[in-house]
Image (cartoon, rainbow, N blue to C red):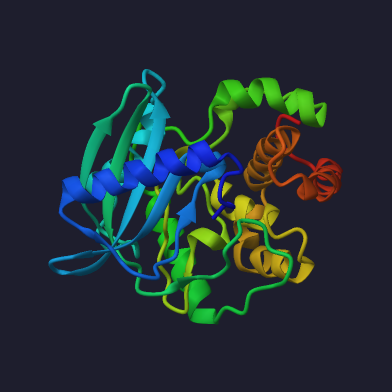
Length: 285
């Protein structure tokens, strides 16, 4: 989750649009429910009451003419294409709307049966998670990796530009790297415990093999014990040539985000980790 936007106009617009979506979908705001904001107020989610009980209504926004289809349709594609065995809240229905300048999509999801591990993507203290939870996560990521898709989580063209820019290395022939399907935004604020549920499927798609494990590891670098646990659980993926490439790809992506003001506290740990990886043998670097 992200803080409430600093701009009151954005807050008013999103709250008004969320109220309109609730009316259109026949649901009511749940008193005392927690609001979950996305980056720069692009999304707003909160619990709602339906005739069948409590659910979660997530509203996404984009400027008219500025919809990015991959992210816009991620939850719908996940509902259609991902195995029902994956532990995630079910998408029940959705509704589209517009005003003069903005397009909105409201998605009504099942309410997750457990709380998120943390409320921020980057952790500074190691979360306490059981061995069965880690086993469930490993199984879920393996299931996701096997799903055939043409969706893309991270663009090869971005890596071709960004890896030289941020790491001073050429990524080589990206077509030679193994790519598998990934959740695309794996961090503890998108994972629930003690029962595993995986949230936020808007960006799932193809990425370098090991991308999800690498993303969880990189976002744990401020808590070395947490990073160590991720590495212990997924070392068979990360301690390979393609796993190191995936980790360098993730580091590149997060350094680009830091350059744009997102989680800047990660920048130095990411550079240190990249330097350590580059001292090891890795393909095309």
